[in-house]
Length: 177
Image (cartoon, rainbow, N blue to C red; front, side, top):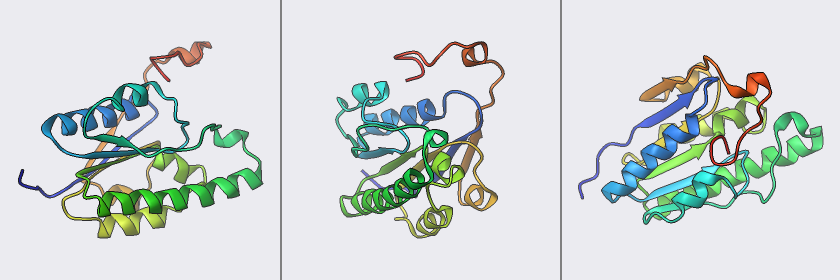
């Protein structure tokens, strides 16, 4: 299989479906025979998409934390600890992607961690500028900065028009989580 130039995708916005878009691209890539590596920031190891996709040949998930909470629920110390954890995990994941010659790397919710102060945006931008040429990279989260957006080849915004959460319906198993 001939390797192509890898692009950077950003799925952003306040609408539902950023992770779903990224996962769909991962399934497509695996169906073609590409090797896909996924790490989910701000999510534990029990997401429904993970349970299904771990069964697909060619897709590998890097384990995250056993339990996770929203950044607004964290103390300042927890935020500091989480930032250190996520930056180290990022280094581990990109090293694995490079050393084990993956074709696609999905960093789910990394943009959220940046906006929440739990990850250094410059660390990501420096790596994107030096990433392996063939590696396709997918990033998700709300409100990417201008410099990060400039690093991307694709930027797709999902806009919320209406969402059940607005009327008090909590996230539902198998649909939002």
